[in-house]
Picture 1 (cartoon, rainbow, N blue to C red):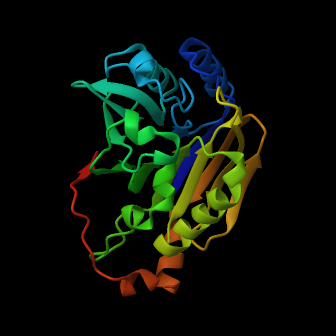
Picture 2: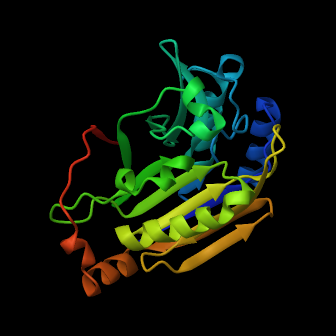
Picture 3: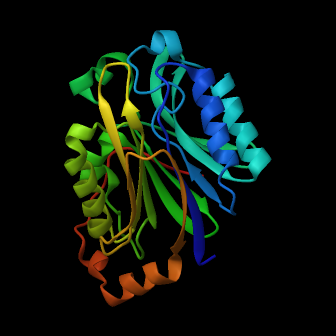
Length: 267
């Protein structure tokens, strides 16, 4: 399909209060009020960016994953965002890609934010997740991953590897210039759409978040951005435009060959 309908959910998260966050996010999903295929929530959407996984972690059978399954099924959407997940005695900042039929894929954050101690509390992932939606390929990443371009880089064979790059985040306002600049850079260098979904408001550690959720086209043009305001925004991404740009400016063909020494995962 030539169009992909994506809804960005920019939310003011309640600190370490799962019930309040799930209720609030459900209200936002209910209020979308127009057709959409993919709904994107922020990083650690049920808790905020907490370093207390021992207190807050759930399993993949826990209530937050079940909530995602219920929302995806009820509204016939793909729902994605990250949660604190415990598995085999380890904790992960895990992005879940929930399909309307209850099937899912997941991506464990590769680059842990050591500046905030994330590396002391969470294990890192070692494989990327590139999901498929009606002929679109979507590379799913989390927050701090944005600073590491090799992890997101298109691996070129006969065609670009993916069409959309998604970042879910709790990115502080004090570094919003880096957030906005790097989202644009990732779009230009990978010749793809980039979606960044960030939270707003102050968290339990007194850190403020300006949101600045964005959609960027493959030329690096900002199609949508929202600073500070809570709410949802739905956009249609155009596959024909993407292919036109890649044909007119086939820079991707000149990319350096390389290999990431981790496995990729497709769903």
